[in-house]
Amino acid sequence: MLVPVRCFTCGFPISIYWEEYKSRLSKGEDPESILNSLNITRYCCRRMFISTFEYIDELLQYVKVKEKVETKLTHSFETEVPKKRRGRRKIK
Amino acid sequence: MNFELIEKKGLYIKFKISGINPQLANLIRRVLIARTPTLAIDDVLIIDNTSVMYDEMLAHRIGLIPIKTDILSLKEDTTVNFRLEVTAEKDDVMVYSGDLKSLDPNYKIAFENIPICKLAKGQRIFLEAIARVKTGNIHARFQPVAACAYKQVNEDTFIFSFESTGIDEPEKILLKAIDVIISTYNEINKELQNKIKHG
Image (cartoon, rainbow over all chains, first blue to last red):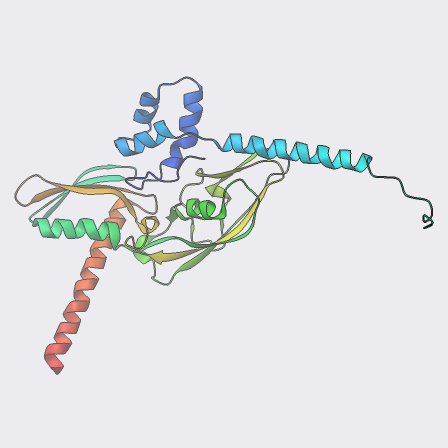
């Protein structure tokens, strides 16, 4: 979902470097050189960066779609409210 | 016994101890990992959570965030309350560990740029967290060190290396671990002397 707060193996809070890693990666830098310059030497911590996939943005897309659909539904429902009947029907 | 500092780089420390045996070296390592008291978030009271993350997952992430403390003067019964209140009003908002505000000015979060959660427009997180002092044998979040290990280079020489998780300077953590060992043995010594005196 999001980057894990700590490394699964050694427990170092690797997520403190995540924002920098992501921004430098988007500029086209090589992951190896970023991790070396951030001084992440252990391979347990290095795999945390390389193998993380953030899918929270995709989940947020569902939230937005749901919101849109709900507003549409309530809107259409409001327009189709049946008219009030005038007076009571006589029962024969 | 001889202590020699080899390298210290930020949170990382490497040192050599000579004149000890493997048992003693392992004692130091194990006390560092599992018996050094550390402050970490223990309870999370979730008042409102409309984010895409489950309450449990949110609490787990918050628990793993290191808290900056002075480990040498840390008391066993310390409790610190934290509060986090974020509402995404206009656009998507990333919630960082820096949003977790301490209600005690002596303690604060060690790193302010840890991502906790992402909120879509209209979502809200409101929670309170209680930090307590416990040891690493209970949960990994109470562990003050990361990747603590030693290497035997000689019959009586050991090279230790570990990294602090950000709660304090690594040499202070080592000092605290040795304090824990000394106080434990002092207690045994006291009990034993009492037994000998009074039978």
